[in-house]
Image (cartoon, rainbow, N blue to C red; front, side):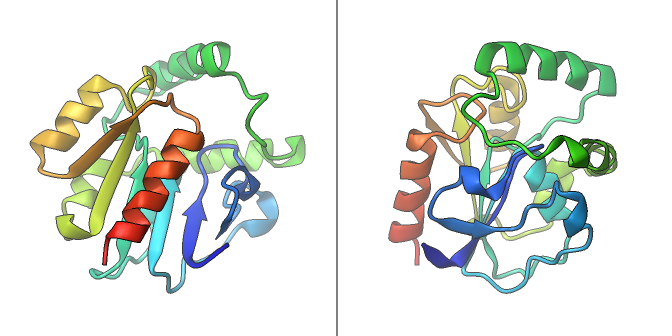
Length: 181
């Protein structure tokens, strides 16, 4: 367990997906107001990145972003991408929030999608941000998003993964934490 690493999960996911890390289950209704606190590292995944960027982040905070929703998209486009994503990747491998929190999570996602991820990332020191993208993420952090990330000068690692957290992403996260002072 990494005591000084905090995970903010992707949409509808529970922290338990990210084995070995503590985190905050921001998509659960009972966790309506939680703060990120002091951590050596924060790992944020997908829409969890939007949540992170809605918080007060110190300039010396080290951050790992997994498949962030970089490009602003219309709501209908995201719904279509969600459907395609669920068909392609499914949710059987992912521990999702209980049905009782879905309405709460859906409202929260709608609010968080208003955040301009790229604009907010550019306000933070680039040397403290590492982005990991699954090369098979065709729905949210696709190749177009990867090009935007590179164009803005952020460190981007591409691994054999799709959008969901997997062992390849976990291995890259471990490598980054271990090799970055």
